[in-house]
Amino acid sequence: MAELTVYLSGEIHTDWREQIENGAKAAGLDIAFTAPVTIHENSDDCGAVILGEEDKPFWRDHKGAKINAIRTRTLIGKADVAVVRFGDKYKQWNAAFDAGIAYALGKSLIVLHDASLTHPLKEVDGAALAVAETPDQIVQILRYVLTGDLPR
Image (tube, rainbow, N blue to C red; front, side):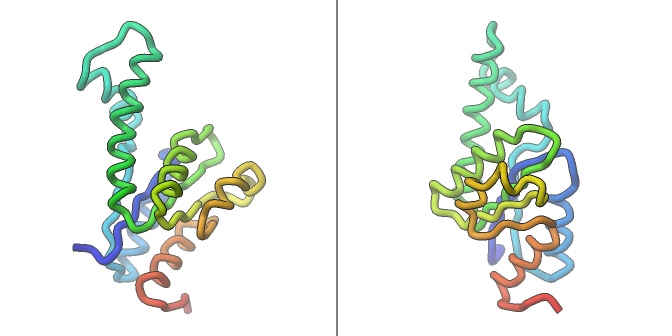
């Protein structure tokens, strides 16, 4: 069993998750990473495929959102730390939702976003224990949490 479980949530259009996972592995950190479903179509279609199609888009999305929420709550509940990434291209409602779940469950929350999003995310940042701008900073935080070592 890993020493730390980290849930990586948010933006799905860049390789930030892989950067964190590879950085943690290169640093020799004993971390298990979990995440939401990052295949957009699977996330959107899960309710209709599993429970049956709906006539109205609202109810189709509602089913999918509920099933995705089961996954999100379960994995964040099992995590020690939640890292939530906000990208700059799309409205990140799912990321905000996940940050709220992590906060409500008393999980250590780290927010990751570019400096340009500091003002619009000030309330989310206020709930976080750390706010980082790069995946490498996340790796350094996780290394410090596990080992107490600072970057050289």
